[in-house]
Structures are given as structure tokens and as C-alpha cells.
Length: 114
Image (tube, rainbow, N blue to C red; front, side, top):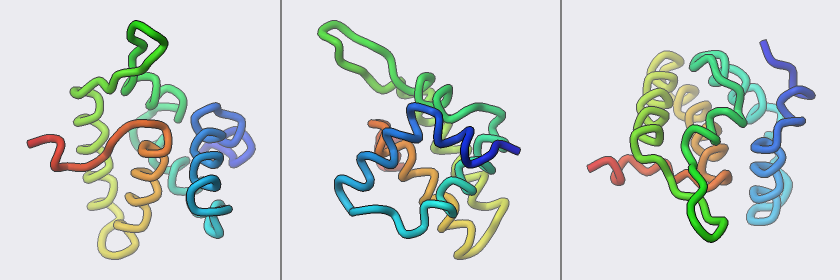
């Protein structure tokens, strides 16, 4: 299992915290969010930075574009992760993961998949 310190050293996790804090203030449940991310990373067998790198690609002008297939892959994995945990608790864990992706520039709405 990945430690909180190891997770917090990842650029994507730093970005997540920064943008979350900037928009909402310091997350009161940061330890929970890190625990959820660690468990999800284990579930998919990827490090947080790797997940975000898979979902975004650099385009001309220094911008990044979302890779639709990878985004759909992670939307589905989050759904599976949520179902595995189950109930309200599963929704809380999955929402923490969605927050991670969203604050790293990867939209997570399932409406996008239609």
C-alpha cells in the first residue's frame, strides 16, 4: 500500500490539493481523500501521476487535451470501485477519486460518455 507521504510527493496530488484549497479552502477530510486515492491506485495498479498522464496529452501551444478513451476507462473503473465498496460509503470514496481527476483537469461526468 502506498503511504500518504509517497502520495503527497506526486505532482498530481500536489495539484489536486492546491486547486481544491484554492476553490474550497483546505480539505477537512484530506487524510480520507489520500486513503481513497491510495486504495484506488492499488485497485487499478497505477500511480496517481501515471493515471493523469494517461488521460491528458500535450497539444500545440502548451495545452493539454483529454484522451477520451482513457477518461472513459477511469470513469468505468471508478464506478467498479464504488460498487465494490458499496452504498453511501462507496459513493464517498468514488467522489474523492473524481475530485482528484477533476482538479487535475480531467472531466469525470458520465454525461460526457453519451
